[in-house]
Length: 176
Length: 328
Image 1 (cartoon, rainbow over the protein chains, first blue to last red):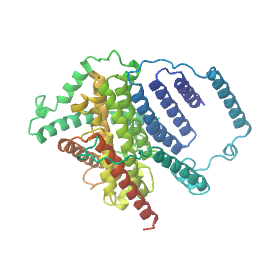
Image 2 (cartoon, rainbow over the protein chains, first blue to last red):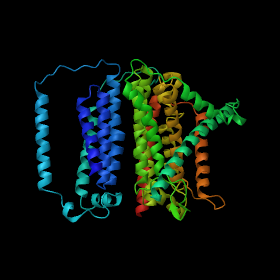
Image 3 (cartoon, chains in turn blue, red):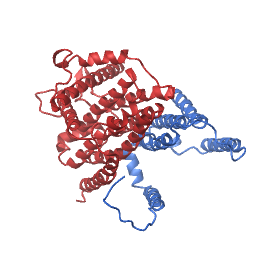
Image 4 (spheres, rainbow over the protein chains, first blue to last red):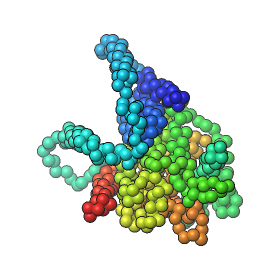
């Protein structure tokens, strides 16, 4: 229980840091802290592969891309709030967030997962167990996710395709 | 209780080995670079310059710790610490030798031996990039920032190929536990023979991940002064350098573990000695490459990573999968 409380406090502090941070880089760092705390929480729940995947994918790749963009765009900028365009949206966001949180908590308490009664299987969370799930009963979902990711990749290629331009003959081949 | 004491002792020993290894890897690198370039290198402090690292350490600790006025103080101080922390923590899962028997206990020569050790090593090493990016950003200096941005782009690009290149080893051994991978090589032979192309890709990407020549664009001194650590001085600069050298030792240790049979070797030397001999050879190749190749150009670096290393490692990965599953 004590590790859970410590990690929960870190995770919530990180989440608050994301929305309260004035500098985008500080927000990104807070999000990294939040992600790492969640990873350790997964470890406590004996989902070791999920924990490592969380660190490699989210902390190690996605947040680095975030930081890449943020550092590129905010270098040397004066900090300052842009004028608020939608009045009162912060309040609405807060109210909805609390509402969703309450609904989730109620659902979690009234409909606990089957593992609460049956206990977790012996190979739960290991590469082995996860592999058997993904390539066995959950194969359909795996394929659905694969198609979704493929669609996204194709979409990026389509959106970023070079404009059709008349070919200009260039003297000598030079790369920028 | 004795397990706990052993753990503490192992952690302290590992830190001592890594720090001492850092100091003398650096000296070896400077001496070797000297020989490669037909000059002497540091040879004045002690016999063959053996006390040079001590002198450097004292110098680094006594130097003034400067911080630019524009810098973001928290992130600026955090960045080198993060860098060093990520570098040190990877080594916790590397088995340096066969389990030994001492005081009636069986002691494995790693801090932890989790079932997914290989993935944990990758998870920690993927965090090392933060120190560089944040250091470059927090300095609020054009050159540092460019170095940090280059580092993030480069490391993300090469991490993919690196991950794919070790998956073949993972499949052949049938486990992600580093100790089991070493033991699997006792039965199947060292993995660098069947996995020679993934090994070369791993080694190339390892040089890129540790930001060493010819992939040292984040600190390219002819273009960016010193890149992400331009503004750092004193002990914080030393932390970045330590992180770089410890990362080099770590990727060498992982290369030995994954491809060269870890601590395995003829029995006239103890296993841990074999491990360090192999590791030293890999580190020497690192230094050799540094002395030989000029720096990549940025666009060539990117196209090499994405258009050569990644497809080749992917094809070899699929081939290994087909072979291991018995289709081929």
